[in-house]
Image (cartoon, rainbow, N blue to C red; front, side, top):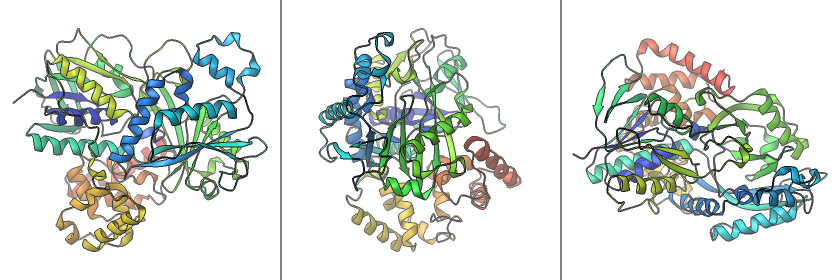
Length: 559
């Protein structure tokens, strides 16, 4: 049996790499210290986009690549990635033109007058969107256009500040956590078809022992260590790349210079009504971009961009950041009158950007790169940078390099391969509603239950086992939701979930549900006990500990 390639990290990039490698017939072992998508992947702005502002930094190839990947994701994961209209409010004609030119031509800031750094005006934004449309060449999304502020079809921004809104199309991935899980599920299916080994070991750690990797569980009291001799190791731990290299005792220059980005979720009905399914892309007073996005049953607002050098797991949204984001909303939509009391929760993540010793955080490239550690005792690579949109192309390019190092070449790629929930997905809302209703009737569920399951699992619902319909709790919902309890058992069997945190934050997406309660946590704890992921005596402490995490990490207090 050929030696496996070990991937450290089960975030969006690690999952994409695993899928691409297995697609090419290679055995893969994914090792993750916590859970799938538990790092930066879960704390992004949840956009699949070309990166309009990258044009200002002359990164045309990155924009072209990102827009091509945006088109692919709309086709390959339509249950999770959907078109989104964004509107950029502007208040003058030529503001920002010289500032953009200065950035593009790398002219030192001291040579530009202060008045040239005004907010970007209509001419500047339209020029960027014209290029954006040319690069996209995407017929399924309409081209950009300009609306007068006050137009009934425009988001009702403050007309004393803004005269126009520039509308353009990008895409949103509501749950990148689920996208990551489904890529790993697809890798597992491919491994079965190709007859190669594929394993995902969450809550495990790895260490190098010469040309071997020693693997140890972090969840059990057992002290046993599994030793394997891999063909190569890929460090895809994102913002933890440098920390992982230190753990592996690999001497390397600093690779990651992460910046933290904070977001909050609000269910304020006035703000949601004004967006009406569309998004605002604002330029805040300090020039940074802020997105106001429709999300689940509420509105997601972000992000900040602050240097961060600590443990990414400890990054939290600060009072200053939250006030900054609230202020940006109220400046654009003053009659919303958003306050701290309107915030349902907040989150914060660290971007795995390339390290640089100078320049603004906004200027740090969002390109990805694969760094080979040539002094290591075995082929070892680290993934630097990357973003949600380009995870698939990052994997394709990286696999080419890794295989070349091993004297091989890729035979296939994932450019046209849907992820499981996106295969043969209904093409219209009417077809989706009809299929979800048929699915519900076939399994004896309500239409609301069928719709809830299709929204999370897409066309995978067609493969749910027949016994799902006859399960004792098939028609019993998790309290306050439309998700049947029987679904939890399936997730625990098929999706590598092991804890309350895994279920709430990254499988069932209950973190963002308005009616998440302690009752739901107790129900999930019972399911974990049945699946032998939790001891009965630990039920109470597991619920209490997780409630504390919700409060301290997300600012969410349960009833």
